[in-house]
Image (cartoon, rainbow, N blue to C red):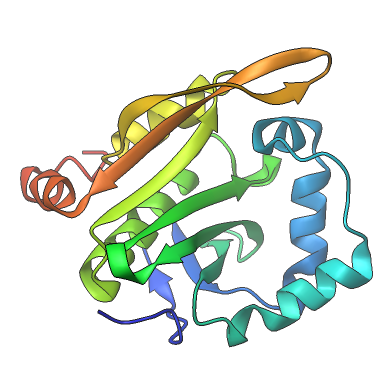
Length: 191
């Protein structure tokens, strides 16, 4: 099993996933400033520009996570990020998160980015399990994750307090054997 020292560039039909860096700050800050993106990611507050730039500047040095910028091939613009983090090498598992700004939504970019990074995590890193959480008020994202092979495992009740209301988080994961079956059956394509 490998670690995340190597930072790949993954190419699909719609997107290129490449290592994120400080130069992506403006595009990612704009994406994260969108009220829907803020809500769907459950982000409470900003960390400030200098801390964010430092964060992106140091991602290439991390061996326990993979942070990739999502580039829309049609425009060449960074529209979001896809991340494998919370790596547990003993159990061959990690978590996944993604964000797509408004300019990249509704065109299948997130679905393809998810499939590319999951495939890399399972096929190249040797992960057995990739998990995620999606808030209950984001059924569109849940459907996209299901298209990419993720299965609902359960619910974390009242995990997020947002605009005066408690929101559940839906726990999902994909296991390597499931991913293999999904790939063989052709379900990882939109065809």
